[in-house]
Length: 302
View 1 (spheres, rainbow, N blue to C red):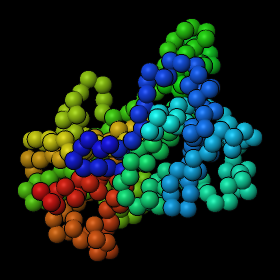
View 2 (view 1 turned 90 degrees about the vertical axis):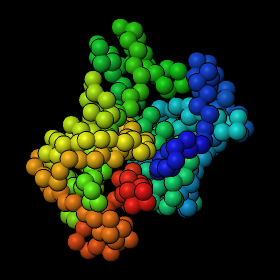
View 3 (view 1 turned 30 degrees about the horizontal axis):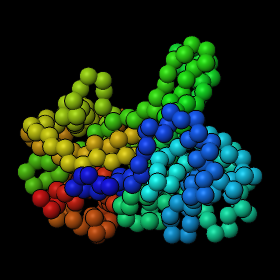
């Protein structure tokens, strides 16, 4: 269920995460064998999905001869257990097993679905969690390989007893405005002509508003007078929470950090509207799956 006014892609996860079940070892045992239990499978971070982009859920029996690796409990859907698992091997290894399904990257899957949909929240949860287990197998305290615990929501080191929990990295992404113009920038990693809202990771010991002000000063040299939080979005690359904000600036003079921002421009509402319609050949803006698109749309309608 979406609890914010703006439903962003990868939000609105409909599952009951059922934390109380994670302490029961049967969660990854007997419950998985129930008739209504289903498993989402991934290979190299790609999710098995049907022709229209929906998750291609498998039964326990269908997984009996698959090389199932790390498996986590996602939650309950109408009381029925839902799991996610990473398959060992490569995508080509499974070409003949699922003729009516395809492994898709989460971005491609979202583009296939085409609209913000609660199912994509399940995808974000599964992708982020499985990615964390893949990259955090070893204890950060002593280096020993850790064990999966609490149905995938913890890892415990058998050597030193340290507990490790999945992480989410907060990122502020902000559409800076000055009067009737908004600031868009292009990072060195972006395609030519692609402009988006500026963004950056939050740092320890700062508020969301302080992070917005710091990032805009560091990347564009502009001073912020006010910040308003608009919406947020899970972003499973690998596991971020994008905090979308509007920021009023004191002036339009730009001093760009060229290591972060190749180019930046102030655009009018008419230019923004035209870009969102695909009518500006000199530059283009993020598609609907990105929260930057939501920020631009919010600015145009408020």
